[in-house]
Length: 319
Image: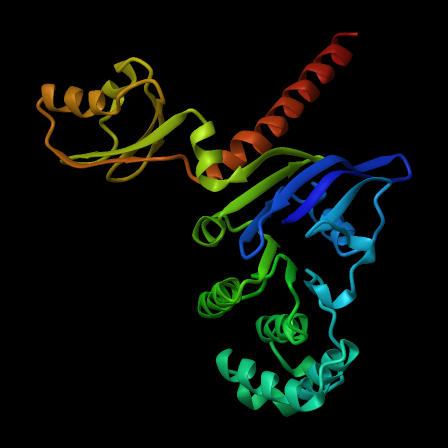
């Protein structure tokens, strides 16, 4: 059984925030919920958590309606800070644990362990307001997991973290997954999604435009990426545009990236380069990145809307 979000719809007045959103998350997996600002990610999360109620549709976990599940089923890390700035870190974490019925001795041991793991053991007796934004984020993460939730939902969890702390949080994600926990998070850092997530859903203007296992989403794009480098730099590659079906998409200082349709053999590019007498120093075949997929689905609408706006403005000017 899994977490199933089934055709949820939510309106705020005349605004349709979610329009039949559906996706599912297998237990013990890490799931990425992607979308531009205002796409509906946070609203979807809050409905799963039963903070908001959907106007239509349903959410189930192991077949049970989310509205009937105990609160300790869920852990939640919101994008905005939800900590008391004047309270000491240790007192605050024990307070949050107590709200879920965690025995104080258990909470103290878990707090000590996580503070040590996040390299901030000395912060136990400091006020939250004295901490950097990144360290506040780590405290908020600890608060979200002290009651050992089955499902952890996080809205932009890497916000405000430097590379070292991003790595620490990623390690915590993987450890929780290995313990059988289900993790759902939103982020704009596509490389992090590539690294951690088995499955994703991309939401655009309140609708899911693509979802599924990352490998299946990539294959469904119907093309592959070829990275080609020849002796010299990546600027003398105009000849590649003459290769049938090949699209030159990115020109780097020392290599180029090409899109090749799935029905075409990428080896034809290598053959063409060798026939020209080029000295090939790099030839790599890869699937599209999640960033490319995101731009394909979300950026296409932005371009269409921009073109429609320009056309509308031209019509009004002509009138």
